[in-house]
Length: 118
Image (cartoon, rainbow, N blue to C red; front, side):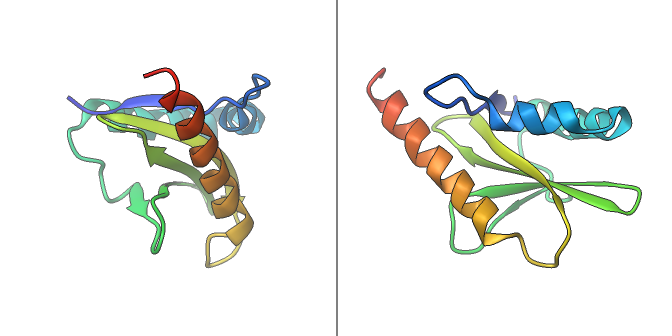
């Protein structure tokens, strides 16, 4: 039984991935949600859409729509939970370092705050 897909939420209640998703055109948002549904339903993340970034614990969800590439960064948070941190339209060959740093900051914050609740 696949993953539990969750959105990272800041301490003040902001949800960066949801903000990104809300700004996407309708058909692009539908495809992104379809790919995330695959993650929820399949036991293994499909490599067509999910790739672990080299030298990091961050995963990249890759969605192509027309000639545009969209990326959602995420991480595994124990068990079968996949936490989505941020999204962006990819315009260069390499994933921008600032986006990866943002995802890693979200992960550290998430793990720090959720460790207290266990």
